[in-house]
Length: 258
Image 1 (tube, rainbow, N blue to C red):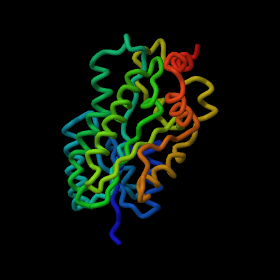
Image 2: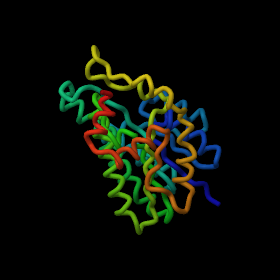
Image 3: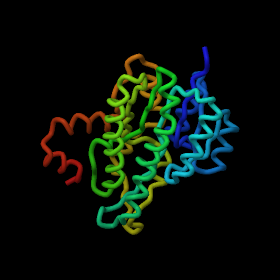
Image 4: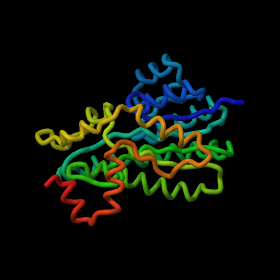
């Protein structure tokens, strides 16, 4: 049986690195995409095929896609769109340029890479695209509006892509993590350095390691019937339910924390 190749973006740490290790152990050929050249070298040393990729740079995305297709001989089974970062701050403190960069990385780069790899995924006859969203793709909170907007956009994009690819053999799923213990928070761009947006203390009680997403990712990749959405952590499950059950004003009060 030929090896199944998967592309993972944002693989230098956190969810992406945990997924890369797990899938390599499960026999996948892993193309581990990272933004920094030193991380690409580290991926090669770990047994993955390191790919340099900056989702905010359209030329970098084009080069990365061409390299992946050449190295895989156009044989791809899956794409795990996991790369991204967050811009935090009150909306009146965030410039147009900061918002454009947030969407360029979290949405536009993901769109470009997916389209470039899609012919190879279609050709496999049974392929998977899995996109890392967030609980903030379900609800928005003060100080996280721009990041949440990018994840809302990713959710809508994924829904349309799933329906458009319905008869192609390519299945599309979303993973929606709540608080996960990664370097994401450390790498957040704070628009107001004197007023950084911090996670509420209670979030620590529900924070899980990045390996918490692995059962959901395996199901999305290997089940004959992958789900549309995979919430991860109690927070993500709770917010998914509360969004449906509560009136908007009540949910606003909870999310404002007052």
